[in-house]
Amino acid sequence: MTKKKLKDFMPAKSHVVLTTGEAIRMLRELKGWTQDQLAEKSGIHAVNISSLENNRIDIGKKRAEQLASAFKVHPAIFMFPEYESELIRKAA
Image (tube, rainbow, N blue to C red; front, side, top):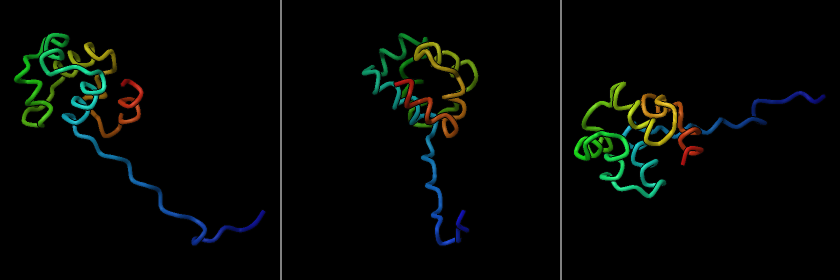
């Protein structure tokens, strides 16, 4: 076995950081839904969907659960999108 030198390695690429709003918008658009359709499916008013997507309001546990139910995913995708970006891609 040959000995590896530091120059043989390259730094890992950083992960994409998603906000909660970006995760919601990405899933909604990948499903082909409007904000009104997501509002109907989740029980969250369309005005609040817009506010969530634009990171003007915090998601909270109840809204995360409502969105998770609508998208049929785990609520952690919305609570911790920076850690769940691979699941978001799979859910779409």
